[in-house]
Image (cartoon, rainbow, N blue to C red; front, top):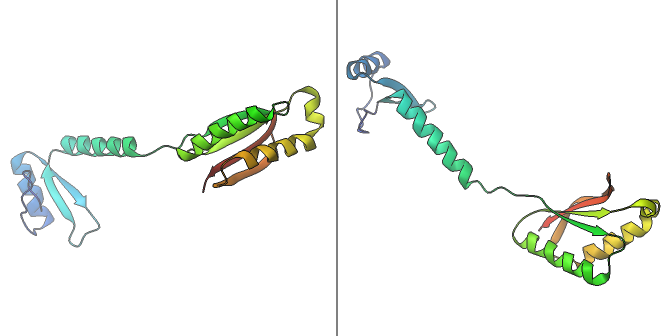
Length: 151
């Protein structure tokens, strides 16, 4: 048993704890039900709920969210353009973000997917070697998509 100030009251029966809480005009809240014997506290339930919500909100803020970054490349792009975009992918990977590489295919480029896969392979070779492929290249709506992340 813990009272409203945080002082320990020791072991007591459930009925005795309920009467003590009722005398003080507060609620009896079971804090750790898995403990032997269970730990209960005398306090306002509204105050308890407020602190629980505050703790959950703080945990959500501290949780690091990984955002999927996207880089689009084309079959027609020159080597220098691919090197620039590979540098951007390297920067995203260093920051810890997974990256989606999307090769956009337009018109007749869709008919020559073999060449597009070769171009995508050369682009992946430009990326920092410290990466792993999460999703192998596969054909999507507007082209070929693959996912990479830091090892």
